[in-house]
Length: 428
Image (cartoon, rainbow, N blue to C red; front, side):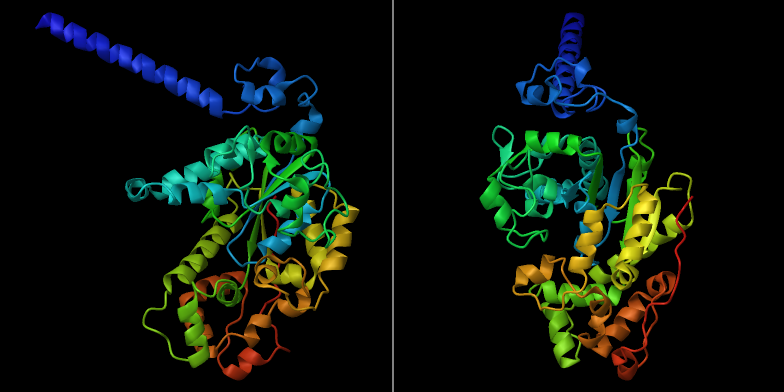
């Protein structure tokens, strides 16, 4: 019996050793091309040929004072809050590598997993995966995305990168030799067709190199619920994270979702057309949106130590009404000069009154008459729905400075703005 116990003990120890080795190997293979960060390739001789291209001499820059001053910007928003429009303020800057909704791939990978895995999935697991990917992207390890992109990239090349065309860096040299200025038929306006046609599949190795060649990284996401979920990133010494929290009137958010996602919001559209609330209308989603917006704004404006100097609250309506002034405020907050290309984009893309030519253009277009569209939801949304939203989201409306309406006449009177003048002080 004693011999048997010794044998079992030895087997357990051997098993633990094998598992430890496997975990270390897996972690090393996924941790990026460079030990201790992407800026230390010179200290590593990668065994894995996947990373060799990123670690050749002169491929990655040495860590310098310029590297230490890199800005890591997160445009933190919710769906249909004007984030695609706002993200272009970063995308147009030649020194910023901009990524549009990369967390989409994480969400899809978890959603497409087996039913058993979905049932076992909790909020913390998904948020942990989001944070891991954000950290790797901020250090320009775009190949970390290979853990989530489906179908799985072959030789680090994929044709399934979500909304690639929304990133100028991914449609320009060195990622795309055919790209650059003037490559799109619509100029600086992102388009879903020209980039894949001109550039072919996306090489994630070249994308990482393009990221490193630019001084700063900006990422847009609508998938992180609350700013508190980002605390570990704000406290990470490898990052200089600046969070631009974009908010919008919840009534405008709902009106935009109803137009962009007709099937999902069919019950709401029936309610809006008939004035009668269907019993099966889903009030939970917009209620959750309001709660998350308010919780994040309250956290940011309370100035906790981990967020101080790293959080800026921006109302979409203020940006739409005064795009140049608000854009300059955003750039001051992130500590960068606003490039002339950003000024030009604002001038060209905030005075367009032409209606969208397709459903895609309505969903994702960033060209608009911003001043006239900021409160245009008031002409489309029925008063009964507005009154219900004001009850559900009363605290959020009050906190963010949005006035309630009490009659149809009040709702339709566009001469009286529902956006109260309210400065939201940048944290210092």
